[in-house]
Image (cartoon, rainbow, N blue to C red; front, top):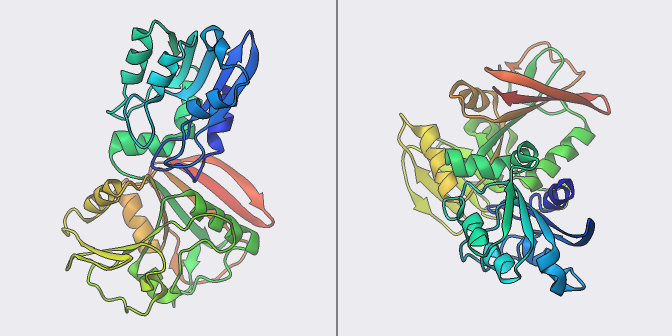
Amino acid sequence: MRRALELARLGFGKVSPNPMVGCVIVHHDRIVGEGFHQQYGGPHAEVNAIESMENKGILPQCEVYVSLEPCAHQGKTPPCASLLAKHKVGKVIISNIDPNPLVAGKGIEILKKAGISIETGLLEEEGKELNKRFFTSQILHRPYIILKWAATADGFIARKNYDSKWISNDFSRKLVHKWRAEEDAILVGKNTALHDNPSLNVRDWVGKNPLRVVIDRELKLKKDLNLFDQKISTVCYNLNKDEALDNLSYVELEKASFFHEMLADLHARKVQSIIVEGGASTLQQFIDAGLWDEARVFQSTNCFGDGIRAPQLIDATFDGKEDLLGDTLIHFRKK
C-alpha cells in the first residue's frame, strides 16, 4: 500500500478534479503489476496496473492494493470496480473509502457481489493526507485553501507603499511557481493586483497555469492590468456585475456572504485547491473567517523597519520548518 500511495503521488497537479490513485497488483508476495492515474480524463490506476501485467490470467490469484475505493460510476472512463469484478481478482485491499456520493461504498458493493474479498483502512491516515484536497472538496464543498506570504524578520509583508519586492530570495520564488503548477487556482485581493500587477502564471517551473482569481468588490481595477489580459482563465469576484468574456468572468456576490459564496462558486467550477497569495488584508480576512487549511510563510532575514504588518494566524498548529538558502519556510495547519 505504501507503494500504491507513492505511485498515486506521481499524479499530483495533473489529475484534479479527480483524486490521486495508485494501484499495485501482487501475486504470491511479488508485485506483478502497478499503475497510477496519470492525467485527468485518462485511464485510472487499476486500468494502468492491469495493462502493465505480462500475464493477466493470474488475476484470480492476485491481491490488488488500491489507495482509494475503485470507482463505481461511468465517467470519462468505465467503472474500475466492474473491471476488477470482471477479472475476478482474488482480493482487493483499499486505503480510503471514496467520499464522492457517486462511489461512497458502491465500488465495494460491486466487488462483494462478485465474491471478491475486501479489506479497508490500510494506511488510512496516509491516504487522507495524500488526497486532502479531494477530501476537502467532497466533504466541505469548498476548495482546500493554502495561505502563502513572505515576511521580513521584523514582521512586515510589504512597505508602506505596498512594495513587497526583495523579501524572499530567488530559490523561494521558484518554489512558489512550483506550487502554482500544483494547485487549481491562485487568488489575490484588489491592492495586490493594483500595486504588484502580478501575472499569477507559472514561469519558473514547468506545469499548467492555475485559474486566476481576483477580489475587486467595487470593480476599481483598471482593465490594462496583467490579470485581465485574458491569456489565462480568470475570475473576478465583485458586488456589482455578472459578465462572461472569452477568458474572463465577472461574478457578482452578496456582501454579507461574499467569501462563502465565492468558495461555493469555485467548488462548482471544480476547483479543488487554491493558493491565497495576498495581500495582508485579504489573507487576514480568510484567517478571521476560519477559511483556511494550511499556511506557508517565508521568513526572510531582511528588515523593512516599517510597513504593512504580516497577517496573524488564529487557531494554527506549527507543522515544521525548513531552510531555503537563507529564507526559512514555516508550515502551519489549522487546528
